[in-house]
Image 1: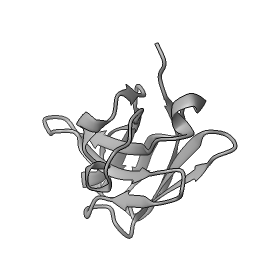
Image 2: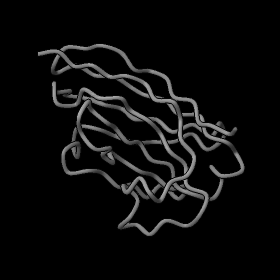
Image 3: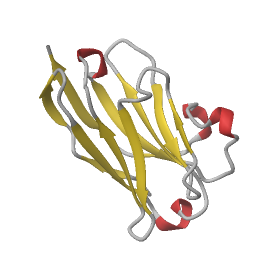
Length: 126
């Protein structure tokens, strides 16, 4: 089964930084957007940031200005640089890849993505 592979999670104190990486399959990466989602215990999955190959990005309001999504198209890798981390950023972070066109307004809606990674845990302590 095709999956995406995330890495880079860990534990950090509030105010710290982490960078997550996601390697996506080339045949879908080439044409469709990639996004990061997160899910904390007892909460619904939340879209964090998305990027398409042209470079257009979308961010959730809760992370705008603190997180940066970027990509390396030669390696099919999408990064999520997280700065000024807060305890409420604690969650399992997963990347997802679309295999169809996703309208800009839906880029942070998980139902539009059909390829997912296993996730990487991010824990921010106060």
